[in-house]
Image: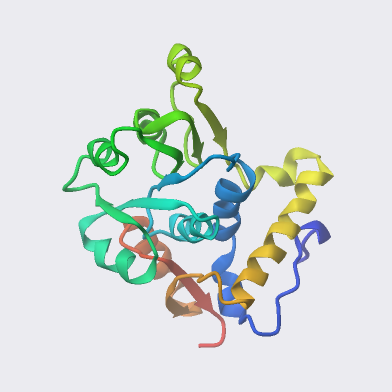
Length: 229
């Protein structure tokens, strides 16, 4: 099986194949939500949904690299995991807390400057109410309905991440950026700045079971299947 050269990146000698596999493609999606789509000038606070997940967990780390105050959401069962593995300023248990109300409390009623939505288009609609003036929403799973008057009146903006779309775009600049982002992500891992958050390594024989577990939504971090165990 061959791959287009534009998406290839060299794995540094001190980054294991397991870690490299764990960083793709969730880390590239997260990279776009923080380092590509938003304008981070005058951005101080961020709400990143799903900090216990593969994309959200990486996005939290990248946002902290930019010096942002970061809040994240997760379910009750995953709160301890997030607090243990991520440097977040607040964890919001969406099963027990009203996310919009909690964001208001954490920001003195201003809202956050940036929201990364990893949940749904419906959740992204709610995120508009969690944004500060001039706030930015980046969504990876669904495009919410937009109130144009509210968007204009509050100076809001929205961006959509579709990582795989670059392959069919016909735009060599966007295709080549896949390799650029992967190289940057691997370098961060090599420097110890980025944790792939691998929770389990499964033998190939358990691949199907691993996919079923993913479908339940009970996975934290990343599952990796190894051909060597």
